[in-house]
Image 1 (cartoon, rainbow, N blue to C red):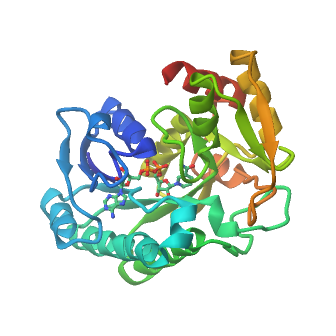
Image 2 (image 1 turned 180 degrees about the vertical axis):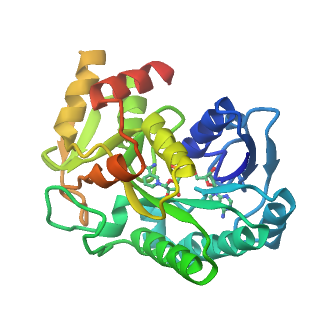
Image 3 (image 1 turned 90 degrees about the horizontal axis):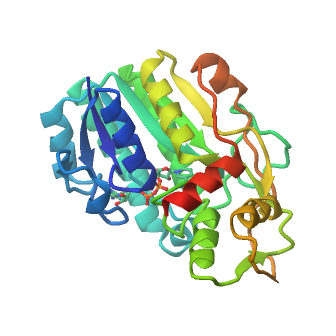
Length: 300
Ligand SMILES: NC(=O)c1ccc[n+]([C@@H]2O[C@H](COP(=O)([O-])OP(=O)(O)OC[C@H]3O[C@@H](n4cnc5c(N)ncnc54)[C@H](O)[C@@H]3O)[C@@H](O)[C@H]2O)c1
């Protein structure tokens, strides 16, 4: 079995590459290294250094004829999407269409896409389900949702099998303190430098924080099962920023916290139900947030 991982030099992609190789899957990476690092790539893994929008990237897929396409390469920073919406849409929509076109031409058997809880925007629900109506409040959420629609239409018109995984807020080693879910990376970096950590607002805002190794196993489950559709890759558990701080305090008791004003446009609460994924993809997460933060802390 052969897989292409776009974005394989990035945070989540590089963990996925490792796991696929451990499973005996031949892996090729497609990444322009705009936000990823060559150091994240094992030496014997082939890298096509192309933009996913490019003809070079298209040709690489045709040349490699992979069985599975994991499409993770993206403009993955919410703030950047607000500042540069054209670039965000070019990469996240245009790049995805290019990879879809290449995948159907190359006869890919499964197209697995990294989507996000950001598609839901500020939906007021304790536990969001996959059939709740998305209503993104950033260009990033909008471009990811558009990419999802293209994937579903490629399935309709060309029978390209697909899984869309909407991730919660992912954390773990190799994450840079930026973009979505970067709060664990930001806190870790501050504490390693013995600086106080800053909380925007009162810290009661909560997210579905999921450890990167659990995201990797969700991708492997999506590769193995035959279902097409949209699935949450999430814990189904809500963790507040204050809860996170307590996890860090266990590892670093001298931790100092400062509070500052709330960030405009921040989502107050987001938690994704994972029952459908458990039932249909036969997957569940295994790492609770205290354990995940401990592992992240010791790895960085
Ligand atoms: N980190 C999270 O919490 C989170 C949550 C939900 C969804 N996601 C999604 O998961 C995927 C991976 O995210 P990540 O956190 O590992 O981000 P990342 O920035 O670490 O990785 C993205 C990778 O894509 C590459 N890339 C970016 N633009 C490219 C382009 N035009 N052509 C080729 N390669 C390009 C980058 O160089 C990088 O290696 C993204 O699609 C992101 O939207 C992440």
